[in-house]
Image 1 (cartoon, rainbow, N blue to C red):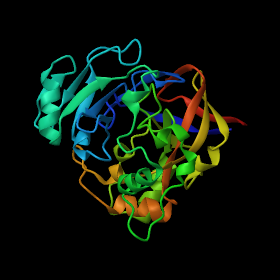
Image 2: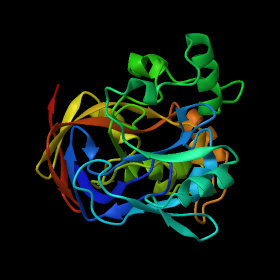
Image 3: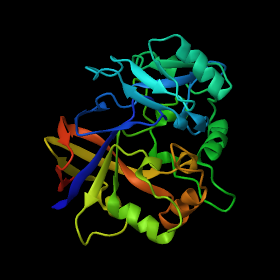
Image 4: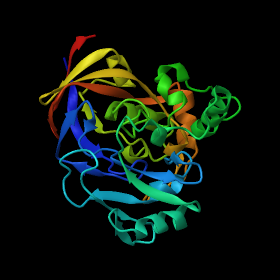
Amino acid sequence: MKVGVIKEIWRYPVKSMQGDTLNQCSVSQAGILGDRAWAMRDEARSEIQWGKRYPKLMLCKAAYRNEPGSPGSSHVDITFPDGETICSDDERVHQKLTGLLGVEATLWPLQPAENTDFYKRYIPSAEEFQQEMGRVFAREANEPMPDLSQFPEVLMSHVSVPGTFFDNEELNLLTTASLAFMRSKNPSAAWDVRRFRPNFLVETEAGLEGLIENDWIGKQLKIGSATIDVAAVTPRCGMVVQPQEELTYDKTILRSVVKEANQNLGVGAHCRVNGEIRVGDVVEVVSDE
């Protein structure tokens, strides 16, 4: 069943920095080639970081100097809020990140999955992890926390799945129907796709309304020559309210997602069959798991 077409493809070379759009991409079990292949590391905590703790990362924009042939194989140009652009092969990039964030910061490419210490959390205990997640998801006193049991056990002790800079699923989809639904609930807010950092924005078929991608969970989608498994809803955190480019700080975004969308917006997915996906490709639900 056709549910829409690919309207936009997004790739984020550096975790938590602004990305850019593509006309086409290669998709595999590692996600979109070049997506989240670099990340900032807080050297005081010996921990990979993201915009949840350091939202100023979202004021930076990253773009590849050359198309990557494999994850982490190509250097990235990072444009900082003051307009200066520094490449990842320039030692000054670490100093620039440190000045921006106020901590000793370094830029790293993906490391081998076997190097598990590189991916470990600064806070290892379950109790401290719960407290940290409360800060990360930026919930108010009367708001529920996401069900953390949906995340892999390895994320209790590691910032990301070792060998990746992904919090969980390596692909994320969001629909125009969901954005329209949220806009109807909070019309004064800027429901810009950039706030939610999907890989694929799906323009849904006429007549499909509401949070329709939630219905795809447990199903396969055929897109271009790739097939993906839709795994779970995407709980939203404090990153969605933070400023980037001309988008201003707006805490009503998260409050609305929590209230109107059961705190989730978009869905995470895994690649089942590698392939190429292009803007305009049909998105088709082909089967259940």
